[in-house]
Amino acid sequence: MKAKKGFTLIELMVVILIVSILAAVAIPIMRGRIDSAKWSEGKAMAGTIASALRAYAAEQPFDEDTPAYANPSLTELGFLASDFTGTYFDSADFSWTSSNPSAGPFTSTVTVTAGTGITSPTSYQLQDGIWSIP
Image (tube, rainbow, N blue to C red; front, side):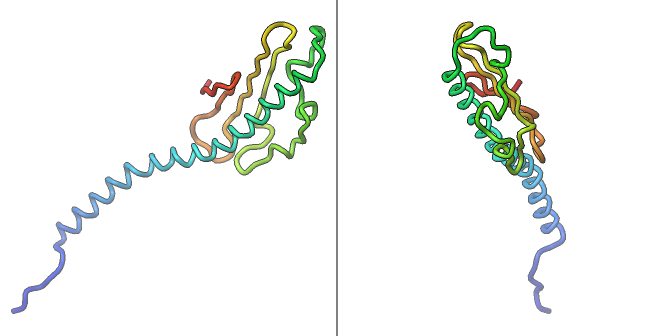
């Protein structure tokens, strides 16, 4: 009688178990990388808004009585709403404030909320060049 060559059922089950454990560990890690890549779009747009806020502050006369100074619109910053329409983020996902330089040092805060298809984190904040999760 010839000896049969091949894998036994137990050997196949062990291989399937090992592959399943590796997949269970790898999927959450890959999910985090995907969200991180999506957030790079939102962070780039937030950086553009922060730069525009600084330029806007430099161009404005120092007038403490200007109430709209601390929160200029996209149009006042020189953008169209469509300029901030990306794959995962749009202009509605951003909010910002800035201080009037005549009242002290200029500060700005740009908040980005999670766009379409992003699970974690729910928002990022860029305050004077420093990123944080509020």
